[in-house]
Image 1 (cartoon, rainbow, N blue to C red):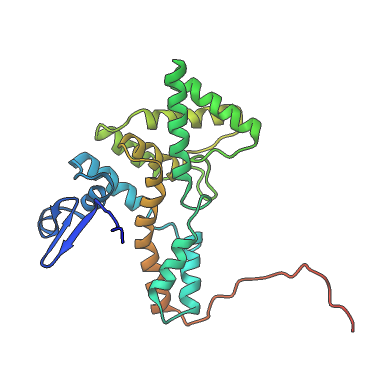
Image 2 (tube, helix red, strand yellow):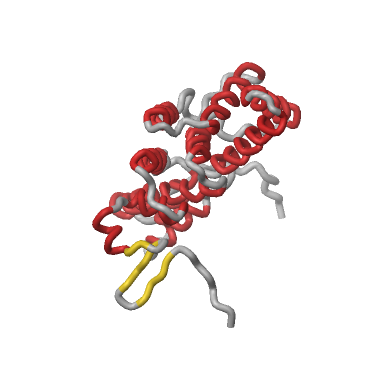
Length: 254
C-alpha cells in the first residue's frame, strides 16, 4: 500500500519534529504564533512577521456571539451537552465564503489586480478602478469592503499601522486601499473590513490565498472554545429559542 506523505511533522518514539525543528526546543524558544507561521510557511518568522500574524490572529478570534460561527457553536452546545468538540466543530462548519472566507476571495482579487497592473504596465490604482468597474457591471460584491456592523472597522487601521511600522506595507495594502477608494468614488462609501486588511497583509507576507480562510479558522477556534465554555457554564441546555414566523399555507380544514 502506498504511504501517505507529509513535510509537516515527523513523530517517532521520544521525538517530535515540526518542519525539521524539535518540538521540545520550540516549546522553550518559540511562541504559538511562531509555530503557526512555521507550519504554514516552512520557516520561523522574524520579529516583524510574528507581530503582524499575532495581530491578525487576535483580530479574528471573536466578533461576538451573534457571528454565524459563534451562534452555531452555542446552538450546538445548547442542544448537545455531551460533546465540546461537536459544538466547536459546528462553529467551524459555519465558516464559508460569506463568513470568514472573504479574506481568501480578497487575496485572489489582489493577486488578479496586481497581475493586471504588471502585465499592462498600468498603475495599481488604475487596475483597482477597472476591477471595481467590472464588479459593478456584473453585480458582484467586492470582498474585503463593507461591514454589516461597523461604519469603520476598528481593527483595520491597527493592522495597517503595524504593517507600516514593521516594514511590511506592500502592494497588497496599496491595492486594497485603491480598491476602497475606487469603490467609494463610483459606487458608495465602503470601509475596508477585517477580511480586506488581513488579505492585504497576508499577501504582503507571502501567504497563498487559501491561508486567509485557514488562519481565520485557527484564530476563531479560540473564540469558539470560549463561547462553548461559557454556554456550558452559564446557561441551561436547550435554552436558545429562535423566533420563527410561519408564512406558509394556512391550516386546511379536514
